[in-house]
Length: 279
Image (cartoon, rainbow, N blue to C red):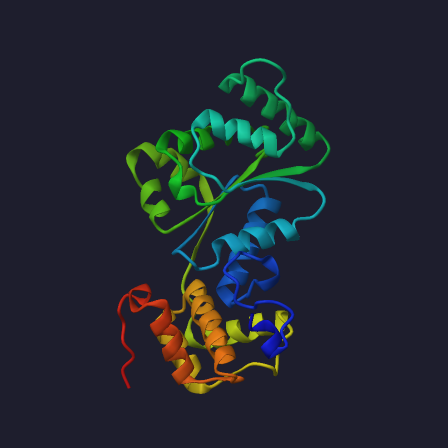
């Protein structure tokens, strides 16, 4: 609606995890490099955690886009799966046929192991990414751990990336998941953006949407966005998206503090934990 008003090619603050809009703050770049390192060096288990809206899924999609042609990948985004459903989904994502008949756990694992050994002999790597891993049941997480037993004497046959909200760290500390936690060799926790990075984040998304020098955010607008978003990229998107819509309805091209206050009011103060801006 407001894209034509501002001369944008698309909505720069869409909430979908589009890797084209990945903003590589220093910590996001470090997280992406940690993932690539863990996969390339066949480290086995890799863990990326962070609060809702910090960019975990976007990094995951960017990682898939960056992997070279020697890596086969399986992405699981529906983590509400039983152990047998997980195995079946992994095989399906990798194009592995278990054959006719009932798909038992043993048949799924045997087919997966055969596939992994074949890919290893071809100097290929295989990575399994599980998004929203905090939703996995303990029994399913234990099955994930068992998949790490598929290895040669020297190498892990499959690299497993667990991506989840902060509570996943607490889950992994429980006694029943201790063995899994001890196998995680690469870890990264995404924090909220600082004030400087929030300003750069907004500018980056506008540039991708062909909006540089077309949409201007004032100093006061940036201050308010950071204060209410607490540096959370998803909240920044929500505020900016509503602000551009309000500016369109008011036939304005500059986003100032007044428009940001209107946007926050429209979205609802409860979304921002009731924080009020103090001068």
